Amino acid sequence: MERYDLLYRLYEEFEADTLRELQDFVDLFPPVDSRIALDYWQDASDELESRKDAIRSSFAAGDAFAEIAARSTRDQTFTALDLHSKYGRAVNALVLDVDETLRSAGRTDNEIPRDTLHLLTEFHEAGVPIVICTGQTLENVKGFTIQGLGNELVHSGDVSIVYEAGTGVFTPGHGSTTKQLLYEDLDPTVREVFSEVRSRVLPQAPDDLRESVHLQGNEFNITLKPNFDIGSDPAEAVIDEGLVYLVDLLGRAVAAAVDGDFGVESAEHWSRAYYADADPEVADVLAAEDAAPECEVDDVPDPIIDLFDRIDVAYYHADAAEIGSLELNKPNGVQAALDVLGVDDPFVLVMGDSKSDLRVMEWAAEADAGIAAAPKHASQDVLTHVLETDELVYDRGDAASMLRTVYVLNLLDER
Image (tube, rainbow, N blue to C red; front, side):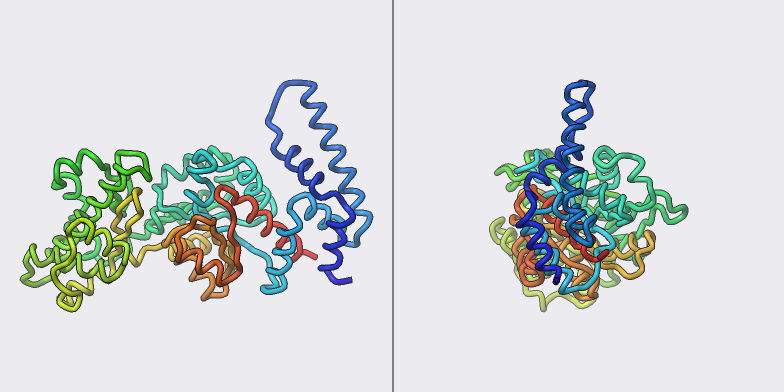
């Protein structure tokens, strides 16, 4: 009998919804001292095993089918079956963005839900390495990762953190390769530009802007964050103003770093022209802030263009304005992390919501190295990519549903 028919029979003949409720209760039951509560947990555990035993005795692959019914819905299971039919292999690493992917300010109070954290431990126990891939600083990521997953798991040697969108990689337990500062390999001229911008970004900011933003504590990237609630109207106003300021400051720094007689006034308009042409969102902000470029990108001198081509300006609405290196991005960081983790033939699950995550998704698709998933509120470019590949879209704050699907994919591959 084909797997489709067997799985159809599984969900027709057994109460999978009850089985999942029991499994979730047993997995997520909080530690308590109450004897009555512990007895209740034991009763649920016994019933769970009894129901699993009934499935085990009914199918040749009973162990796998019992786990499938206890972990995923019918829709998740058949999505997993479709994925396995298409790719014919299991996911051998998870590549996960955090903010608005694993956790959501709108649905999870900016905390990674317990069921998501538990599923990550299940993947870890199954030998699947985890790569946390984020634009946040290393210290921030280490803090909530250890708090959520535990110090032992994070330092197991099977977890890596790609931080600041790929400027560095931290993989505890790997000796000399534990921390890789990828930005140290950049051309000295590029590093000079970043050093110049960093030294001037707050001291030379207009008073109103300097009082309304702060510089995120990055090792390399230069990120302005609002001193207001992210997403609020005041945050939108200061980040839009901050973006114009960063673009102009970057233009002056590039002109100073390039050999040639380039004036500061022209450099600002060259920078505005280049980055407006490169990103429609940046162009819209510049126009709204009465800072539209007064020249065309074709007017920018080639030596300036060559350096702009290596530096990225990113805009996150009412959240951040950032300068980063295009040679340091999440795909490069992920590949460096996978090398340290020993994943030689990657087939990863990439989960993310932003343009920087899209680059990892596109790398995975082009290299036949994985699949991509995104929440419904992801950026349009991300959603377009995901919908055009495997349609792995999930509700805000419900990353667990996608992890369950991939968990079943891996179980099916073991059969």
